Amino acid sequence: MPKRPPVHMAAGARTPEEAKATSKRHFDRQRRRASPWRLWYGLAVWKAARLAQLALQPLCERHLARDQVVPATVVNHRLPHRGVWDLFIDPTNHESVCKACHDGEIQREEAQLRASRDLIAQ
Ligand SMILES: [Zn+2]
Image (cartoon, rainbow, N blue to C red; front, top):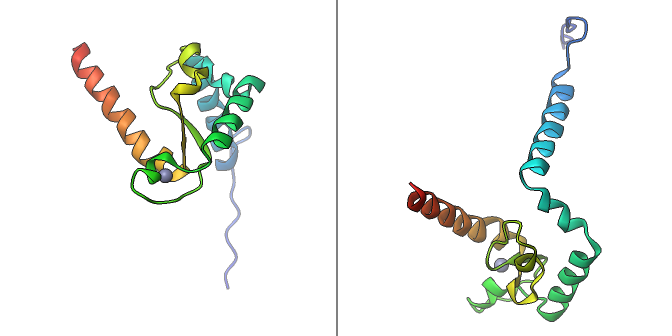
């Protein structure tokens, strides 16, 4: 089997892996600047609120509404908090969901909400 030819790079050039890592760090930094409240997810008060919600309702509420029993692993904010602390930490705004519901159904709902808000703003 032929060997792969050597790759010659300019001095100081980044490998694709280095470029990807730098790009991810840049992306993460931009996200933190645009949404500093993301750091709230690291706070002990959030971790305690999350565990309390999952203890109170250990099943996915979206699946339960369809008579399906699926363990919840994510605490969703029923009303997106968008950096409003009171909405972030209010237990009545917390909903136990599975990752599939959070990453699918809920992300689609929030995208629709953003799109309709953008339409109203125009
Ligand atoms: Zn679910």
